[in-house]
Image 1: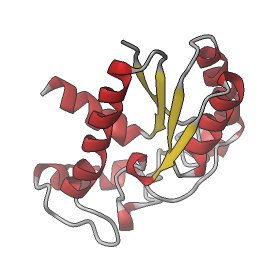
Image 2: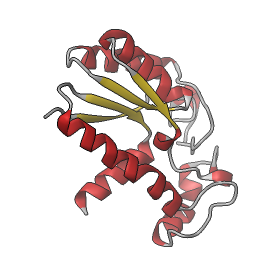
Image 3: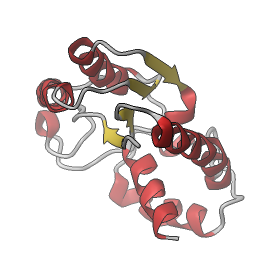
Image 4: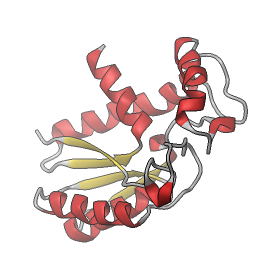
Length: 166
């Protein structure tokens, strides 16, 4: 039985402190690239997993995740699968906004998971897109001789922790 590692992409220009930003911003489905710190984090992640003998990498199809996955694949020489199932919650009109300014609305959408975020998706839609795929990767990891890495996003990791806890 191998292991499934869930990995968040590295830092971007929309993260708190990046390029002088004072607040964390919603990245969502915007295809914002890794910044210099994120690029260094990607190299460190690849070095860490290069020692694990990774058997496969799954990655979100957004470039900030694909860059990390590409570096892991280059070191591990394993197959990679790009998928939109590992994209974060599509927060539509909240994308680019400061997290502190929209966290109340985000929490309302989690508490009322059928509410459709304008230009985005409901929390239920996100959950139904991501959790079955997570379960599939976990099932695959149980029979895999080598670890599997999934490069994804912060909201996906939060949902995975909540699902595991429940």
